[in-house]
Image 1 (tube, one colour):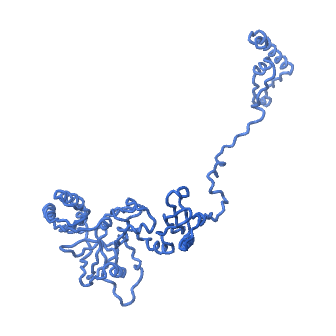
Image 2: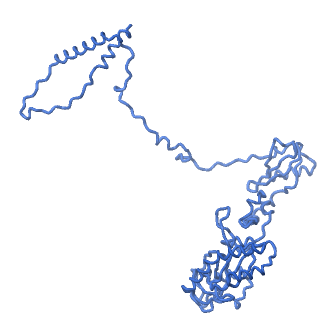
Image 3: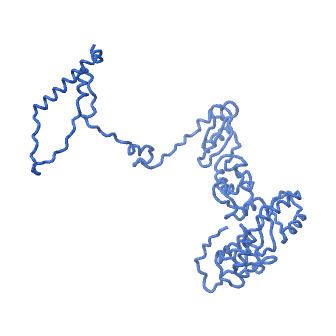
Length: 421
């Protein structure tokens, strides 16, 4: 639909008048060439009023200038300049509002027209409806496999919608280009964006490209073969000329080998033995030059021992880079997230010795924890008399009394005596 004007920034030579034919785009991909007889200054995207039969229609300017001349020569070489319809004026707000109203009626009218066609048992599918901007005419686009007698349908629709009805039959590809969509490649359909002509696509295009003939994969949204099968067909046809014909069988002492497939990019031809002779060997890839050698030997009445002797090993080249930083390793960040174990001080959590009597263990457990006394304030500065420090003899006597008390309690306890026995 969209067109890029790559000649917009180029000035015309002196004395040459600009091309007065413009390309106007209507609903979906419908376009037409119209003549600017009034010399209106129009640019891309301007909404204009153009002549129609009957009445008028509203469209959007898609191409102006010399690029329109190229499009006219490409799309309609038999275009007559004098017979072109005219651009009347630039659309006003009332015209645009009426145009929007006409667009809003199209979906409902399409559903009702399908119901009328089903009631008449007509083998047709109405895919799109396009109202004219002045609400005087509606064009119904339909697809059908054969000819359809829709005379009664036109009478019913004219009576139902109170407008002039025009029926236009299109193909499946034209229907897809009008409706648009997303292809299996993930991009917008070629027929609705840039493809203008629909060439015939055959299954031979898939055979030359070594594609499986699966209709679900080869068919597009229109139900026909994809147009993109023709894009690379010429390249494949030129490449296949360098390969020997695939219908020739290779005769060896081991058996007869039949051609299975051809890899154009790797330049290999795959062969397999007929019958049970090559059941365990499978497919054998051979270069086309070696295939020609086997064919020439068969013409001379000679047979090679085995096709595996002509098979060449394909060496896969490694990428030319060095893993300096280690970006290919999945474990390159593990050493960063590992928690380092804190070293504990050596004197605190040592295991106690197993040797020693129960009395010694009890002595160790009954020892009171020595508390660190906070530093005493120096009271001499306040004028108070300092306390006398406790002598060492009193401390020793207190410790002896505690030990004696614990020994006496252990002797009187019967459980301790049982353990000692």
